[in-house]
Length: 429
Ligand code: HEM
Image (cartoon, rainbow, N blue to C red; front, side, top):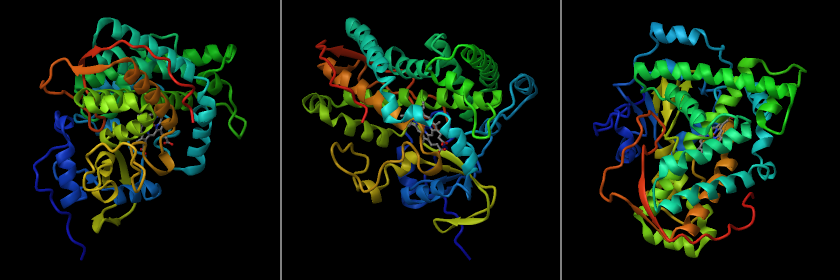
């Protein structure tokens, strides 16, 4: 008889609205006491260490990612919400939730070449120019609310431009992206769920309008490519398939990068010695980016559904069980990253790579673009500002309410030393 799931002794609620303010004690407790933890409150089973996360992510046939996340929202679907959703285009399963390998790979291949290093050189000049413009404005003020002034506009304008949605303001693109993210984040209020559904409808219409224009007059952006391509069987993408791919790129590449940028600069503001070290050794920026990704893990976890009865970490898992693999916990696993796994380790090579971009079939398609943006941005920041300080030291940090994205709502800083230095040669590698 296998042992029954153990109960984590600490009374944490991962669905609590302020859980994201500091989830790390809970993760430490889970790793030590219950790396497979069946939460009686939510019915969700958490997976918390590296080896088990790897086991789940590598086996997409047994642990499926095809999960209707909006349906898991606290409050579910209600008539007014269903009415708006009925006006929307039907959904198509293309990349993120598609575990059928040939079909997943076919849809992923429609856009994957845009995210190869050799092709990212096309978007790199735009990233650099946008970075410089945003920093210029911040430097002129000497103070900043970093989320609104930099961390939001940079990634959203980059992906907007790459997709071909740059005819819309970045604030509109951000509104649309936030709507999708909130739909998937389980914790939106009924009011917000309604608003998000309306915005989703608006966004879908805008994407299809853009695709129609690009069909008539294609250019080099991703939507032009999707609107004109033929799949291996000779047919074009259907509207729901095109919408699904574009929306995944719009959302996945945006909130995540925003949250990594903010987490990184928060650390630089709290640790002046680290800022000075990077100023002296800018070649360590890549390592800083990887460690920020590991320690912050902006996508704190991902859902999987058990497709058959199985056993994980010695714990029986029934068919249909909803798992949430907490990548953020796996990324601090002492067995892989050492007893001091919560310390930032520049220039040290861990036993295994971090899991901030996932693993296996669904490994992040945009990882190289994200890394490029993060490297360009942090390098420009450490070169430009001699000092970065918290405007209100000691003030509590407030994080967004979301089940698995971790990101600060706002970050007020003061900046000193406006020494503009040219960036090094292209960073795509
Ligand atoms: C710091 C930034 C980013 C982080 C932390 C991140 C994280 C992740 C993670 C954890 C997954 C795996 C999901 C799963 O297994 O269920 C994923 C998948 C994905 N990401 Fe990212 N991502 C980032 C940036 C981007 C960017 C810039 C793009 C594109 C513009 C992007 C597009 C995607 C797509 C399309 C997938 C699904 C891949 C598939 O299912 O085959 N991501 N990302």
